Image (cartoon, one colour):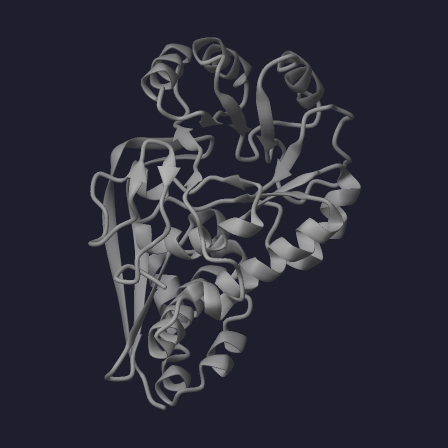
Length: 325
């Protein structure tokens, strides 16, 4: 079997500037890939992420390095060659799963050996802003029972303001590594009694100290890439993990990571980078394995890819075959 490989960089403007503790963007730059044998086409998308020293140019170069392997039909060899290239590997593996599903006349869920995906409730993300801006945004997002709050250092007032504005909402507080060990205990104490589902990556990935004792569930994001990270995270006190395709390297890798995390007792959140529905679809297909769904990336864009996912308020529907899987 021989494949044609098409790789392209695409930019999507965001609906509003998307701000987290370390950056603010008005557009996201993704890499989309397709493999084509002349009869079927499989597609994938990844988001090169500066936090992991990635750019569209670097990811495209990684994918170009395996063009000959893909062209000769050696997809397995290409994926092995991209083992340490999370985003690039994800784009190729997602396209390969999509291709296999279409070639077999089946579904990606069958290829991945998981239950068919069902409609699920997704969290909705509020960008980091002033206390007033975030409270207003929380009230405007009344159709979302789950809110993810992006904060920076000193972000307790924003978290408290959102909790006051939306006492009905379950909150995920995401610091994106912005807090420090000295301030974390007081930050956690300040959230006591609120409807907090998870505290996500409060400290920089790779920190060596254990987390302070708390009744809140602390979730690793930037600190989790592979199954080998799980024992360390558990020992440090993390009890939840955010699994993202671009970190672990694709839908098969994500499935295996989720299963390993669940076996250890972690709560698992299905997460995403900001990207089009094509990037969300593989993780939506793994929803049956996950406890919390945070797959609103396409909602944050001003425009989406053709045949995108259907969102009805907080309800996210499974992808149709003309998108992925």
